[in-house]
Image (cartoon, rainbow, N blue to C red):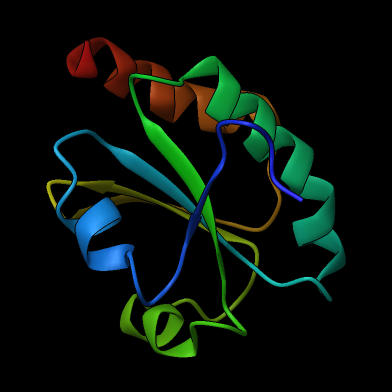
Length: 113
């Protein structure tokens, strides 16, 4: 279950909500069976709350949308990608501490204001 501001991406909304977004979008590629993905979920939810209104933050289930995972070269999960103007500008593979994601997002949040 995602947090109040955590978006859910899939094949039906990815092009519009991520690729076509006018603000940066952080996407957590994950799966329910992935332990590190489950442990990262609260961090993603916190980030979605912290950056709400400035940066879109959400999750994409790789089992439900395998073609999108393949399209962006997601071979290991969790993989977190930052999209800007439809392009991947940052890639973090594996569960990282919140400060690692904040470092990337803080640089973008000011530009998104």
